[in-house]
Image 1 (cartoon, rainbow, N blue to C red):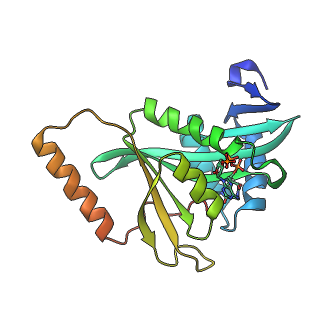
Image 2: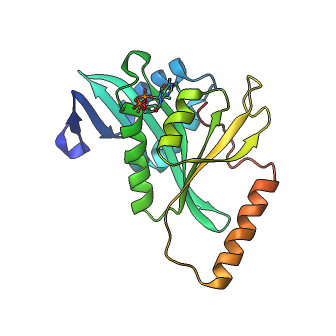
Length: 194
Ligand SMILES: CC(C)(COP(=O)(O)OP(=O)(O)OC[C@H]1O[C@@H](n2cnc3c(N)ncnc32)[C@H](O)[C@@H]1OP(=O)(O)O)[C@@H](O)C(=O)NCCC(=O)NCCS
C-alpha cells in the first residue's frame, strides 16, 4: 500500500479506500466470517467496481480488520447513499474502527451531493443500532422478516442538512416521505448488514 491509496494512521490502525482487486478477497473473507447474510462475488463486485471511492478497509499490522462497502445513486426524488456492509473483526471491536470507516464513506457521499444515507440492520443487532444511533441515524421503517434467517430489519436513515426549500419543494418532500413509510418495498436486490 502507498500513500497515494489514501492511507492514514491512528492508534496503529490504517484506513485505505478500496484500491483494486487485491482488496476484494480481504473484504469477502471478513464479511463472510462476521455477517449472517450470504453474498455472491457478483454482489461484492457490483459495489466495489461501481463505487470504489465509497468502500474502505482498516488494517492493523498488515491484517484487514474492518471494512465498509457502500453505493450511491438516484432514488425517487433524492440522490442517496446506501451502506451495504459494515464489519469489524471480533477482536478489534470497541475501538472506534467501525465509526471511522462509516464516517469516511458518509463524508464522500456528502461531498458527492447525497441528501441522505440509508441501510438496514437486524432489529436484534444492538451494537449496530447503537453505533448508527450515535451517528444520527433514525429508524425510518421496520421490514418484516427481511433477512433469510427470518429476523426483521430496521431501515435506518441519516438526513443531511439541506438549504431552506421553497413552499412547493417542501410539499413534494413531505409527500415522498409519507409514501416511503407506507409502502413495503425494498431499495435493493440484496440485503445489507444485519
Ligand atoms: C457493529 C460493529 C461493526 C461495530 O464495530 P466497532 O468497531 O466495535 O464499533 P465502534 O467501536 O466504532 O463503536 C462505536 C459505538 O457504537 C456502539 N456499539 C458498538 N458495538 C456495540 C455493542 N456490541 N454493544 C453496544 N454498543 C455498541 C457504542 O455506542 C460505541 O461507542 P462506545 O464504544 O464509545 O460506547 C461490529 O460489532 C461488527 O462487525 N459486528 C458484526 C457485523 C455487524 O453487525 N455489522 C453491522 C451491520 S448493520
